[in-house]
Length: 115
Length: 114
Image 1 (cartoon, rainbow over the protein chains, first blue to last red):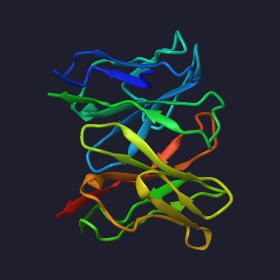
Image 2 (tube, rainbow over the protein chains, first blue to last red):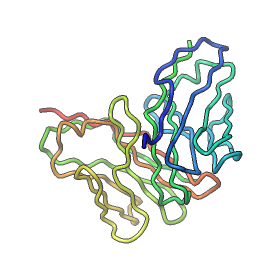
Image 3 (cartoon, rainbow over the protein chains, first blue to last red):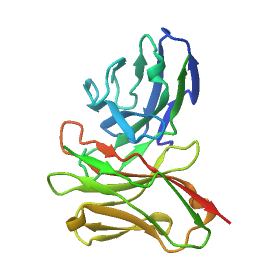
Image 4 (cartoon, rainbow over the protein chains, first blue to last red):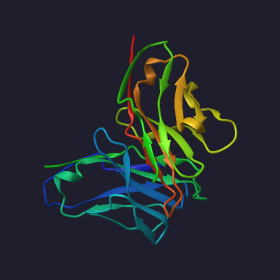
């Protein structure tokens, strides 16, 4: 049981490039989330998914896209990278009930720099 | 709207001293409150959570937190800090909605000196 895994750990992009951040969980969790963490700030929700084929926007979705074709995987796509997207990105998943009392499990994060 | 305030950006304590990290929340209904810890280069790990019942909750690693509705606070405490407790600590409130996600405070960085 690996929990929530993310790849890559680090990445440097040039302005205008695109990339996909990978996230996978092996806990059969329906709810999955993408957060970004800017320096000195708390985590902010980018996108979330309540199950395969269902995604929705969070607080800061601009410049990102997601897909959820399987329960396990929830990739985050950056199109036309901008310096404002320099951040640490965390993927998380929640136990199947999706209730607020559930614990969210976080991946180790991807540190992205856009130059 | 829900929000979380952690007024202390950085706290330094000596090893063996007691610790209290402050958290204030704003939420219209009964809050679901969480404390997470983030060690350098790591993801977030849940320390404890509160959603009902006893207002003093125990967590992992010897941490506890007390929910005070009258003060809209959920402060984290530890009686004796260890060097390994040096990390970033985040308070979060759970919010009902489509995502049922968490709203995080800006975090408090804890430094432990020998």
